[in-house]
Image 1 (cartoon, rainbow, N blue to C red):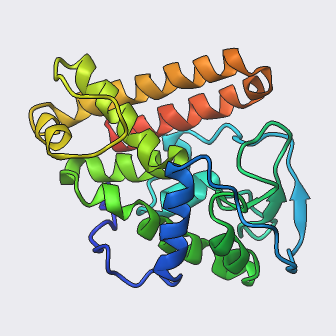
Image 2: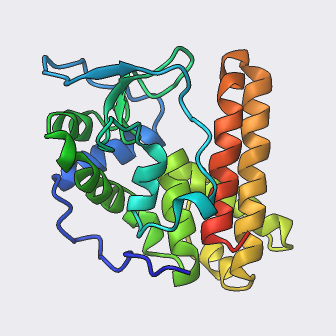
Amino acid sequence: MARFDISGSVSRQTGLESRMRDDSIRRELDQTVAAPPPQQQQVPSIEPMSEYARPVTTPQEQGQLPLPMQTVDWEARKDAQGYPMVYKLPSGDMGGKYEVAGINDRYHPEAFQVISALPAQERAKAAAEYIQGYTSPLVEKLPQALQPFTQDLAFNRGLGGATKYIQQGLNALGQKVAVDGGFGPKTLAAINQVEPRSLMREASKAQLDDEYRRASENPERKKFIAGLESRIRNRLAIFGGG
């Protein structure tokens, strides 16, 4: 398996102010916090998008990119030169109106404004640095074997959401932990008692079950299921050994 670039610390310079990351985490954990009013900005070459989560290519086709560039590769919609585009989100998406490399204008407004204004060829690196910083409060608490998998999971479904899926996975493996989205010593102790690949499989199943439940409750989400299934299964195949 490829080596992954996940050695940076929380204090590592990410290229974007830590305040942006902290504000984004706060919005993700507290759904009652309204996103700030939109600012006047120049949004370059916005492309309409018919699906939020397109089916990604198989691991054999795409190879294994160093983290967090793998997440950027999955998230980004690319122009003819292969650079991340700014695109308009479809109806039913919960991420706001626009997005670039998975960084949307609802939960990550400051980062979106900065990255979308960059030259197209600079967006992937900036997005990767932001994702690294955003996910590090959770990822850096985990054993090495779980870090690549959890980094992508946490950016895909937020820090609290990723923690809940891991906690559900732990319970499925016989560990008794509260499924509350809070990462504390009991959750970490339980993680250290299970085999990492088994936990990644069970956490993936927990996310799939949750996505199916959400789609059954909200018909507008059904159009995203195929892409989400591919994302979850490819993540497991690459980072969890299938």
